[in-house]
Length: 235
Image (cartoon, rainbow, N blue to C red; front, side, top):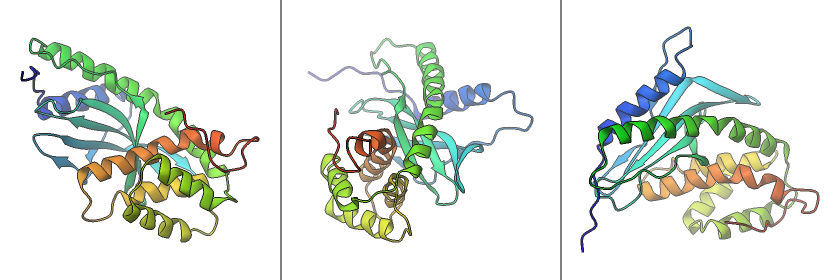
């Protein structure tokens, strides 16, 4: 039997995301700019769009990370609709999707109203932005942790996240360009690999989500009882 789901308009979702974001940052002295990441994709099965706030950012060393939002929607209902936190590296022009700063699922039942969708978007936007302060803190911690067992760490990451051989090579090449390698270096290399030409949208999303998940395993992977080696994954 065909699943009965209510298609949710991408335009409606974006309009409500912009509205909720503008209201959240309404206390600014200057108007809020909202950019759309050029690496967007759209099919009936899945749409991926990421919004960037270039004026709202945090510094990690010399790097500026802009806050943002990542929208994933399916007009056919084949995948769930979600709004996650998104951090955009201004100089490198790459980003990571923070899956811990994410929304609760939205109902796709046939009788769901537009008002319910609007309320869900408003709550989802708040939840996504509320979680990004923690993410910045974890990125700062990752920048402090230099790796002395790089090959072990990379192998563990590649195996756990099922990174393809093609992407592994590109990540390794980028890591090797760095003078000193930290967990932050690996996170950036993974996120930058998502910008390579010719990648399928699913690969882009996968790499961005890996980059967004890695900061949270830094202390597990490089704690006092585990000098930057393998981590026992709980997910």
